Each structure stands twice: as C-alpha cells, then as structure tokens.
Length: 256
Image (cartoon, rainbow, N blue to C red):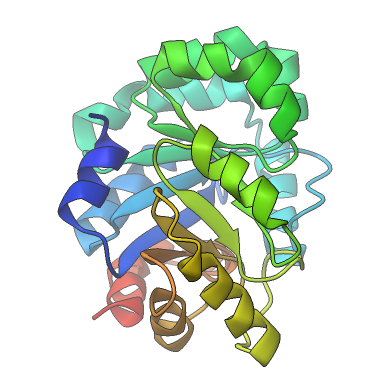
C-alpha cells in the first residue's frame, strides 16, 4: 500500500492538497516549501513541473512556469532537488505537468526517476486515456506510481467508469472546464455535476480542484468530495516577500 492509499484509508474527508510550481519563485526551494506545507497541515502535495505552453493554467500558474523556466528549472534539475524529499517530507507527493516534457525526458526514465525520488503519483492533463492504457501504463505500474485522471462536468458516464477502473488512488474532479485560477461558484449545473458523480458510487475517492481559493470554497468542495486542491492562490503567496513565513498561516486559514 503506497502513501496515497494509506492516506485515504485513514482519512477520507476534508483532505487538503496544495499545488506549487517547482523552481518558483527560485530554484532549490522545492523541498523547503514541501516541508513547510507538511508541517503546516497539508495532507498531500502536487508539485508542478513547468512547461512553456501550459494550456490548462490561468495567468498565475502560467507566470510561475515562465519564471521557473527562466530560473533554470527542468525535470533533470527537479529530480536532483527531490533527492532530499523523503529525508524531510513524509506525506504523499505527486508531480503534475504536461506530457511534452515527459516525452522529451523519456517516459520510462521519467517514471523511474519519480519513483526513486519518492513520488507517489503523476497528473498529466494532456495524456489521453487510450494512450495511457495501451502504451504507457506499464511504466507507471512497474514504478509503483498512480496515474491521476481528470474529470470535467462534460465527461460522460462511460468515460468516468473507465477512469474509475484504471485508477488506483483518487480521481481529480475539475470544478468546471475552465482554466486554473478562477473562483469556485456553485451554480445549479455544477451541483448537479457533483451529485451525479456521488450517485455513481465510484470505487476511488474524489478530490476537487480548480477554483478553490479559501476556507469557504474548500468547505463547499468537501461537501461533495473527499477533499480539495488549492493551487493558484498558494502560488500567488509564493510571489510575496517573506513567503516562507506565511505558509503556516495560509494553510491554517484554509482548514483551521
């Protein structure tokens, strides 16, 4: 049983995950930020690796990716930084990014490097379900990595069932089909979407992301899922002076 499975086996409500971009605002801060988030109460983490064309991301995360790339962040540099990860961080850690950098690095090599660094799962928004199942799943499985699939309000029940079948940790529910960084608004259609997912009684837990910015939107999301992910709002914090001293207050402000 990996760290993600252990987490969901022991705690299945109000789980808080925080996303941040590796290499932002500076190189060699990835593990420092991860350690501070764990100490502040985050349940698991998503570390984004930057890409020059992050189509699913809003301005805040796009900017962090640009800065990270200018700072010299790459997968090679990231894995070098993560060599210290499991000496200082015990909660589950996922990597999130686009397929192009993974393909350039080499999918088998990427999965091996991630596993050696103590990474528990990967989120690749633009990796097609068919290609994962028929071409790349052995690399993930052999490395003990969970592949986290994304579901939107437009995803068909048939596809969601297939995702549930292929998943072995949790399913990432996008709060809408928009980009990251907007505020969660629980319209009637979005509530129907969440209720539809709940009624399907999936075997895997669900975590809601995109638009979670504060304690109110976090609590709303947790009414319909096992937890929620905060990304853009935390990345904004990392752009402020003295950000390391503000991390504990940020996390405590989301889930007191």
